[in-house]
Structures are given as structure tokens and as C-alpha cells.
Length: 244
Image (cartoon, rainbow, N blue to C red; front, side, top):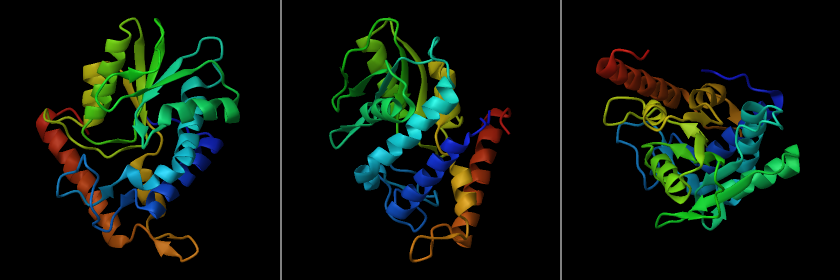
């Protein structure tokens, strides 16, 4: 279900979209995907590692989404009390998000932890905690499932209430479902995305940006992306007969 975007969140989304495109974290020029890899027919590439130096700006957008869409002023009955996610080059996205919530939005009392490369959790998760998972791009969903299980193993008395990622690229799982739908069905959590991928592509189609007036989404990329979405939709429809 589409959520209303407050002005502050829209501004954060716009900064995030420009960051992804200008730094090459999302590219339509045929460059190489990151290690999780997309199939060869995908008309874009993803590499979150290209924005590690700007991860604080990424955390800004996540924090604004949490505050404006998930918490929405509910200070007494908080819908989440803990944030858990991966670390990038030793930098924990969850730690940054919680810090931004304090500094920018004056939201206190949320704890954080992060996943270890070999599995497990660094940081204490209290019994009864309402845990929000955070991730970068939702591609195969494996990282979300791994972090979900790590939290459940570390604290069985905690509740995983959802997952927040930058982008959902409309991948399809081995059961013929959109990956995001499969995660929601299998794990019983809601998946949120800070930046709707289609919105970013449509907004930047043909737009000249930056000092050099570069166009990051030209006509060919725009058509290829829409062909990709139509193809993914057709695959899911043929498999399930329930998705539109």
C-alpha cells in the first residue's frame, strides 16, 4: 500500500535518489553489479559499496522514514524499540539511524545492534524488544532472512516488527513471488522501502542534474526499465494468477 510522503521525507528521498545515481550505486550504464548479483537481463546495476563515504546521508533518509511513516508521533506506544542491521566497512547502519533519530528528530530510547559477518548479533536485544531490521537493497531477500533469524536466535522473546530497505528492485523468488511479498508472507513482517525505485526512475528520466548537466536516466534506460517491470509483472501473474 502506498504511504503518504511528508515533505521532509520527500526531500530526503530526493537527496538519496541523487546520491545513488551520481555515485553509481544505481546505474543504467551496464556497469557490474555487486556480489549478490542480479540476473543478466536486468537493465541496471546495484553497488551499495559506492556510497559508503556518504552513508550518513543514507541514514538521514532512513531516520526520516522511521519518524514520519512508522512512529508518526507515537511516543507512548512506540511501534519499534530496537534497530538491527548490517555493518558496512565497520560502519553500522543501525547505529547511524538511531543516532540520527536522536539528533534530528529528538526520538530517544531506541536501542541498536548489528549483524556479524559470520552470523550472530553484536549488541544486546532485550526481551520484549520490537525490532526493526534495516538493509540496503532488497534483491534476493537472503540478507533479510539471515538477519531475521539472527535476531530470533539472539533473543527469542523479541518481536521482529518489520524491515526497512533503500530499494526493492522487484526481484522474483523461486516460488514465483515478488521477493518482497515472499518475505512478508514467510516471515510475517511488513517490508518498507525508503525510496520507491519506479519513482526515482520516472523522476530522473531525461533530467539534467549536477554541475555537468548529466542525464542519469536517458530514454533508452527508461524504456528498458519499464520493459523490465512489465516482464517481472507478467512472470508473477503467470505463476500465481493473483498479482497485478
